[in-house]
Image: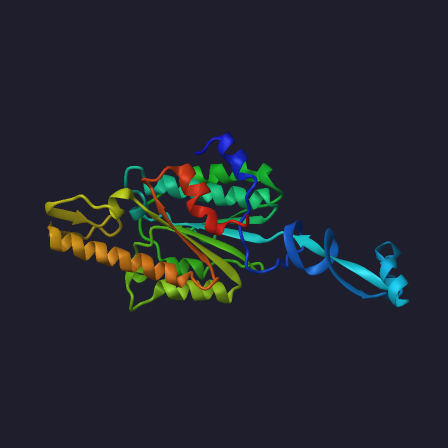
Length: 292
């Protein structure tokens, strides 16, 4: 996991949300309700029973009418972080699973620093989410939870997302390599269905596409026996120039399709390369998901 100095730097950043919060607990997000924060929202005419301390006497002097100053109430948002723990994530040097843990830790820390309610999901066990709130004092629970994740078997991502428990608008962070049949199949369009479902549930999707350096820059050559890490199926092929070109074009098409799904302000997509320095990845590549 990352060191204390890294998280101290990270504490000055917060995640973007696309909706104002409707939660009841106090926090740092702008709420749909009016309240008593320091940020001015609007005027309204005085009604009997209103707090006289919020009276704007300057407006009264100009208009000879009593008006109350209203302020934006600050509430917590909900940040849901889903981590793909399928066998395909346990691959690469550096390992995709370790990068996924670090990305989950980073987004969780940002949520807790901004007094948001955090919900952590293992996509293989959606019925038992870890809920943490009350600030970064709860971050140790997050680290312990992440250390216990095991990467094996298969995951149906679309089915997993549909099992989430939503508590109003918020941010949903998806950490995965997306190397699942339904996600890769352009005809099935499970990826597009997943994003549409999250938008319908008033979630801002943040897609952290976690790929190993070996998957992005393939150097294999010759006759190979490939074994699927999840279902153990086998494929024998010869890695020649034609095969490499076919793979690279397919990978480029997948990345462009995933970017397009998050375009138009609906969400954010970041390709997370295990071969990239983690500090550059977090403080440069992930800037698109921050509210700076």
